[in-house]
Length: 80
Image 1 (cartoon, rainbow, N blue to C red):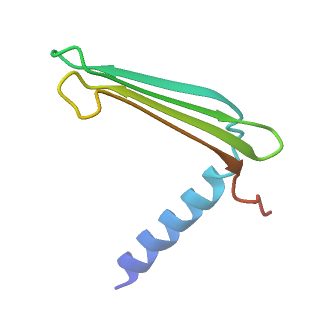
Image 2: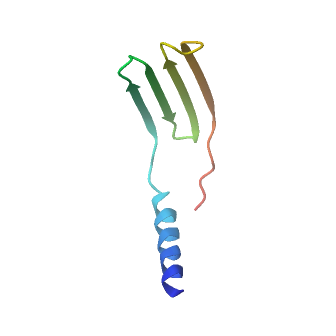
């Protein structure tokens, strides 16, 4: 039972301390399949806590073949 508590405490402290890293910047991921389907994800995180997310897909046999989704807003507040 002590080992379970120890593992839980270690997991909590590692996740709590990992949140202090700066993640501001632009991130992108593009995936392509053998059938030439394309999936693009773009995320921009600003210093002021706002974010911009853009998703694009082009699936040759999809209905509709192209799909775009955009979101922007205010992220979670940082507490210390």
